Length: 252
Figure 1 (spheres, rainbow, N blue to C red):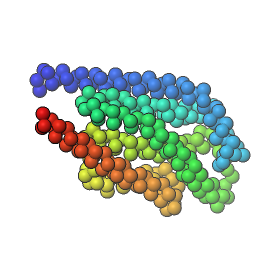
Figure 2 (tube, rainbow, N blue to C red):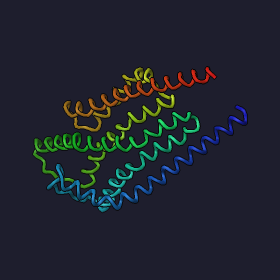
Figure 3 (cartoon, rainbow, N blue to C red):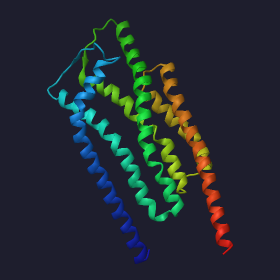
């Protein structure tokens, strides 16, 4: 490796390091803002089903602080995810053509929309099913229910966060296809592995019954197939733009 290539690589690593540090700073600011918003968010979630009327208990002195931190993390992810996508775009921007720069920048706002869609799906669909299932098992065993605040919200966020992050998959795949790292052929070859991972995640975050697993795994698989379809659309558009550019340059 010559000195020029080594210097170029070091510059790229330095640039990536700066952008990662910037993302961490935004995350820290988001966590601070999340601490202020944690109490209203907590009050709201405790006023609606399935928590309405539920008595939560602090089982240790750190439970209140732990609850605040869990809420702060989820709230911080809302601004951090689109900002992280923007930093990714800015990092690869110098290697993109002008059209590709404009096209990929449009994906950034959708990172926020997909995360919010994932939060809505996981909270209004998956979490109530999982919560109801666990309560039914407790009732069958004749056990008295005592809910710790950390245990309750850990159970909730262990479902919400993974599913919400997986809803970023279509945007990420479209972006990587647009810059030439992924293509539909590669995604089709990865289909079996992707299905296995998505089903595994679906089983991991839901109660151990077939219906709940299916209700989570099926939408995730459909999300992957939708991502493949979007990748095909983006890939064809990219090929068409390249062909038009080559034809334009050939006519000069």
